[in-house]
Image (cartoon, rainbow, N blue to C red; front, side):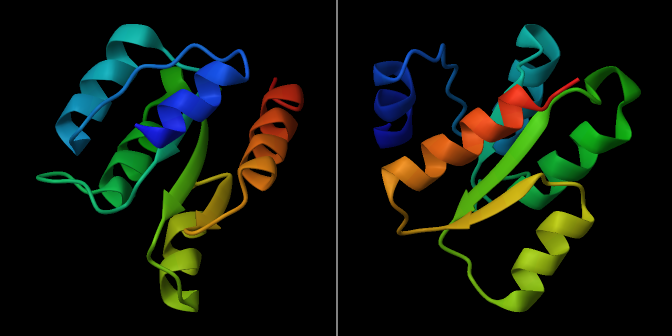
Length: 109
């Protein structure tokens, strides 16, 4: 919810999902430009959500930022290999997250 507040305070429209299944439904329904995605989601984890989004050509425009407490080279490598555009480890500075979001949305195309 803190991310939702941060993004809305900076002018972004948000949709929140509390599980990987809800996230997939939200992507299909709303066609977002960017997903802030935690890896540790119930039922379907963030890695699988990332992979499913990348496998669907209709969603190729969607930018994915993994935002997670799971650090470590293996997790970062897996996330980026699955197609995430960025991997941000908690805790992070709000300004850093916003800068990455702005960068990814500016260069989409």
